[in-house]
Amino acid sequence: MSPDRPKPDWSSKYWKDMLIYQRREMIRDDSFAMTVAWLEFKPGLEVVDVGCGLGYLGYTFWPFYGEGGRYTGIDQNARLIEEAGQAARDWAKGGQVSLRVGDAYRLPLPDDGADIVMCQTLLIHLEKPGQALSEMARVARPGGLVVCFEPDNHNPTLGELFNSLPERSVEEHLLHVKVQMISHRGRIKLGDGDKSIGVKVPHLMKEAGLVDIDVRTNDRAHYIEPPYEDMLQKRSLEHLKIYLLDDDNRANLIAREKEEFLAGCGDMTEYERYRAMSDKYLALLKKQVEDGEYYACAAGAFYIVKARKPG
Image 1 (cartoon, rainbow, N blue to C red):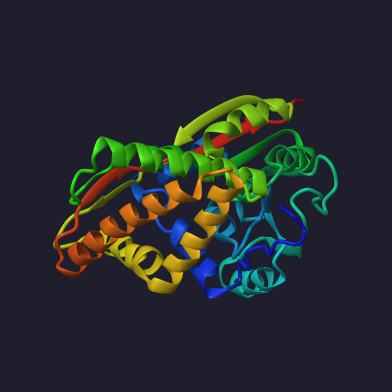
Image 2 (cartoon, one colour):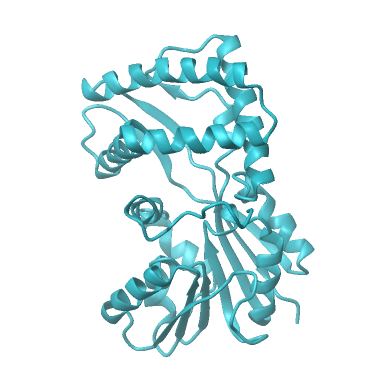
């Protein structure tokens, strides 16, 4: 990211709400125990969380490693670190918690110290995710784990989604795919991160010298159907209204998308055609949501990748 371009303020209400929403029910309750076992959590571990935000990973897995263990959360946002520290007073019982302001490219930690070094939706926002992974590997002990929870938010946008909206024509779908691909490349060129990072993490781990690489996807599907009685459906509908149908938030999304498209050397005439098409379907979506008629189903694209430091 260019130093003269503003960075997102993750402690602002918009981004902080997004941090909370994206972590809600990330792993379903009936598969959580299997995930804990696969990640080798046990009492007394030294755990580092890079880009910790409000400390979600720390307190989610605390019951399985916190007794006699230690959690170190690192984030570049001082306000989030402060709030995470206040929250830790309630959940961090039986072990130690340390929260620090720090840079993912230069972690303020010694070599070979942590049993598990983890991150969630961090690499997707970084210009140099491989460099951050190398730092995570550096602070892991020999034989310790590096664990990444990262999405692929790009490739799912290229498919034809199943929902209650009218089916797009072939020409409309191709225009949508073209704009998404150009915007994706523009985002990377701007240094704002790679939205398809989830599928690339295993290869990046290999390049960082890690071994025993294993990959899973989370088991949450995005399903919503009237009358939206299930709690997960209600929260999905709430998210849709706030981040896609709210005029201010929508304007911010469009501004970022346009900037990325132009950075990817896209043609403005094509973008205007795309914008008119998107606005047409957005109006239909808004009416269906207001009338309680919208439905959709799609698989998530969230990867959980673990690897071991040699030795």
